[in-house]
Amino acid sequence: MTRVRRGYIARRRRIKIRVFGSSFRGAHSRLTRTIAQQKIRALVSAHRDRDRKKRDFRRLWITRINAVIRENGVYYNYSNFIHDLYKRQLLLNRKILAQIAILNRNCLYMISNEIIKKEDWKESPEMV
Image 1 (cartoon, rainbow, N blue to C red):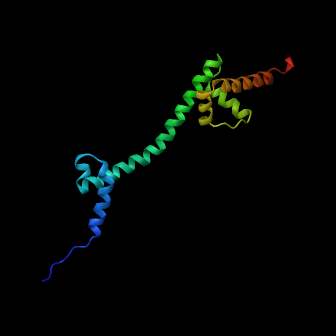
Image 2: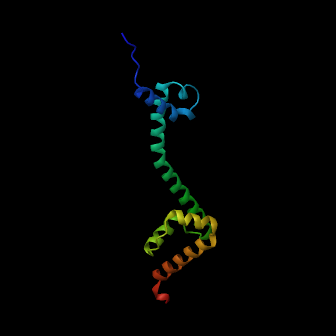
Image 3: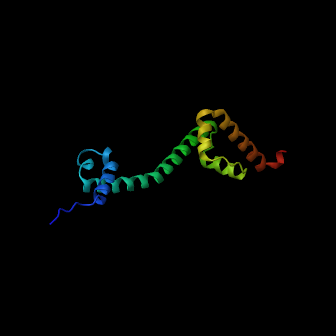
């Protein structure tokens, strides 16, 4: 009876898994079954944390905007600022506003002061 040479398909699959797990530590980079489990876990974490990252950045931007806005006005805060922006139809997203808050606070102060002035003017038309 002749010797059967096994095919390369299973070996090729294992090599592909090993390449993925080459950055893991210990048995997670050596044992095929453990590498496969860690690969699934890593991909699940990556998928979950892509959404998480978006959430975290939005929270960071909101915090930065709120901090700068509260410095400027005594009774003015983030929610009022965003509400007034929408009423005035100024379409600036939170990422851009946070960049302005960090790099050029005076510009954000000017934007908020203009909005506050317009709102005060609309509330009391008899002064005009």
